[in-house]
Length: 516
Ligand SMILES: Cc1cc2nc3c(=O)[nH]c(=O)nc-3n(C[C@H](O)[C@H](O)[C@H](O)COP(=O)(O)OP(=O)(O)OC[C@H]3O[C@@H](n4cnc5c(N)ncnc54)[C@H](O)[C@@H]3O)c2cc1C
Image (cartoon, rainbow, N blue to C red; front, side):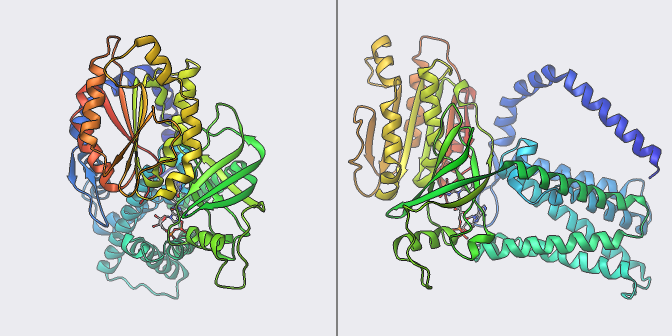
């Protein structure tokens, strides 16, 4: 590629950006108009249902992946080049596709830069990785097919081979089946292989012309700038760690106040916990919320198999090694990056139905607080909030009980609506349903706001109830948002149910944290 072509691409890009900024209101209107048919026919219906290691894939997912493959295939085969030209094109395309994979060390941070949820960026990371390795394999096949000698004494060839092998290994080890054995070990191998691949690619391209060498410069520049930028989002705090049976609560006292929006999370790093914790950071949702900057943050952790399980073990028994039992009352240094993630504009909806299971309640709590604050201060449109929480163990309930009770104490929905509207149909403006399968929750201080049921929640009935309540509204009927943070089954069930109400202005939002 000539330098003049690069100039043309850059100038064209700037003009397109300026045009898009100018036409933004029309583009937004178009997207709003397309939103319902897109949801109805593309994003909600599923072609492939959820399986243990893959899926679910909606029609939209399959269409996007198909287009992605089609565009890359078109570029490789454009004007039917000879095999070696097609092979070189595939190699260049492979490098271009790798940019999202090497753009930074932290996916949460890259997701924030693009303004997409972490799950979406992880999907982009996966798809571009698979595409890059597939194109690279095609490049290798064309070299093998050419039967030209490939002496490994030549540094370019040797580094090409090392880079190709490490990328292939990296892809194979990204298999979710292998990750289920030890997430932490496999993620470190993944990162080490990424470093080896990046270095090998650089050495492989060292003596090549500006294109494709420029792609290596782009990798390096993007990686370095995001890495440096990340430094501004690292915070220092003192952590107090306590546990309620099997649920861990971490209170972070911040070194400087921080604004955290509802639904955002942080990547927590507590180096002093153990030797291995020095190398690990884990994402946790900030359960506390305030309309101002916060000086302390609350996190609730459900122990899994790795660092979180060890943490609980040390809080209760001390570790197997010589390390003593952790004293939760002693503050310890904790660093974290963030806040990360997108906060949903829940206050724009007339009705909000929050559904969660187990520790998924943690992701709903800050939104609940924000909604109640918004209602009291007349900053939000929301008139009805309904929280459904399926509890499997008593401990999760006890751990977050104080926050729930505090939220319900501040709730003006119930009282104000009854006074002003004088409903006689028994439906409250703000209410919570606790669904338990083991024992009754007896610690709730607000029986007038909380219904306790045994067994799984009848979601179909709850959604129908919400729709009927909305249809009875004399005032203008607004949109309904169903927010979910729960098990795969719960989310799948809700998606199918919400799909039937799309015409009634109902939509589903899957929060960033979804408990396993
Ligand atoms: C945006 C977000 C918010 C979250 N909020 C909460 C919360 O508020 N409370 C809570 O209890 N849990 C939350 N989680 C889940 C929590 O991060 C994991 O349970 C925790 O990292 C497990 O650590 P472990 O070493 O014990 O896990 P392991 O037993 O080693 O792994 C179990 C699973 O946890 C996930 N996991 C492990 N390490 C990481 C990591 N560094 N980054 C991302 N995922 C990882 C993987 O899916 C893995 O399969 C959240 C996850 C995300 C993505």
